[in-house]
Amino acid sequence: MSGKFGNRIVAGSTFGLLLLSLSGIFLWWPRKVFRFQRGSPWVRLNRDLHYTVGFWSFLAMFGFSVTGLALHYQTGKLLNLLNTPSRALSMPGHGTTIEGMLRTARETLPGSTIPRLLLPERAADPVFIYQRFPEDKTPAGRSFTTLDPRTGAVLSFGSTRTAPVLQTALVQWTREIHTGTILGISTQIAASFFGLMLSVLAITGPVIGVSKQWASARGRRALLKRNKAHVLSAD
Image 1 (tube, rainbow, N blue to C red):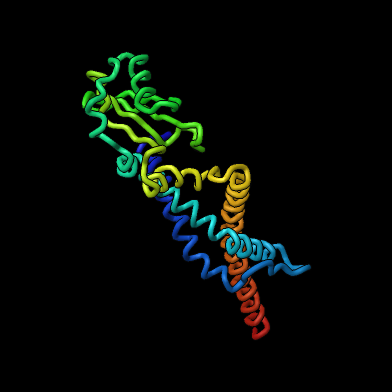
Image 2 (image 1 turned 135 degrees about the vertical axis):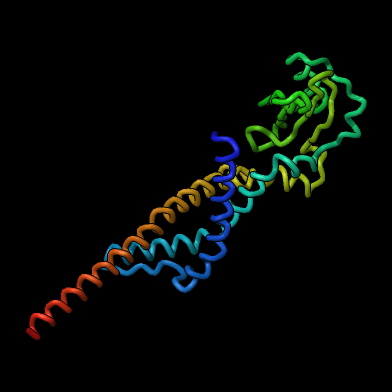
């Protein structure tokens, strides 16, 4: 929503999540699982909750971060993996009207719907048309057609139905894994649950830091009080 600046913030935060998922497992590992103790103070309970959730959500955090970074860089180089410009040379299209361009895209990839059409910001840029097949589990689809804005001719197109498995994995499966739609409702529930657990970690982590500062401040005050008492008794 905020352009390139916001894009960089999201990418940097995702990279930070990747580092946390890799480094955190070494911090959480000694605690292992469910080390809660009855009657523990809330500070200890918060710390145990943070370690336990972090340990069990390690793979989800790692998956979210890796697929998130893949989605971030997907629009450029990865989408080009599906391009077939040589086959597009013989497709003149149906002109430069909106109706004509939509018709061209539908004929290029029969059986697909068109959720979005992007007009070029510069004259040299192509018209980019997102296309989605019924079996795609992403709202915008992972197929596309690019058109020449001056003639309406097809410049290139990519289809998830004809792409090699490796290319489909990079372009299509990354988003399905990231959003949890790859296996239907079961993986959507799992992705939602671990997304909630990330929020738990985001809350309990700072609480641990703040509680340590409070404990350190109380220790300094207690030490200062004892020193004053010692000085007064010596006097």
